[in-house]
Length: 131
Image (cartoon, rainbow, N blue to C red; front, side, top):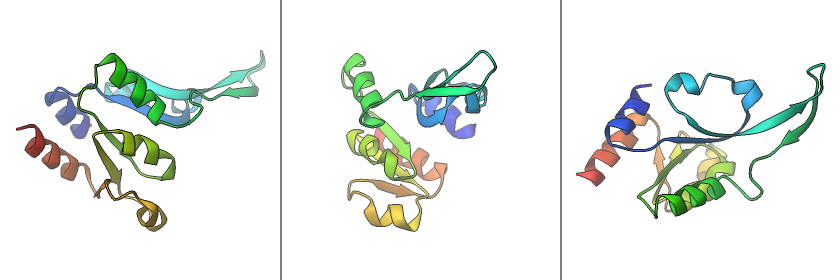
């Protein structure tokens, strides 16, 4: 929560792009004070059983970032992710942070990713960059 607040103090608009399903994560993300959430969705029948899934992206998480940057007229962007499915988004952002990656993800990481182990490292980098 402190990390989210520090980003907000730096005037970042915060978006969560997740492969999780909104029906599973529920209000947990909203408790962070973040309204811009891009999850996947389940389709359920009248008994509540899952009958299908709606995936919000065709190619990758970068699609959401690409659309946001078109709307924001190419504002400075950061992306934070921890695994392979985040790589296209991290690469698309001005600064992509690979957060506490597994050894396998670290081996496959693009050279332009900033590998970080905690949120303070991201905050310190951004303070230096934005001053």
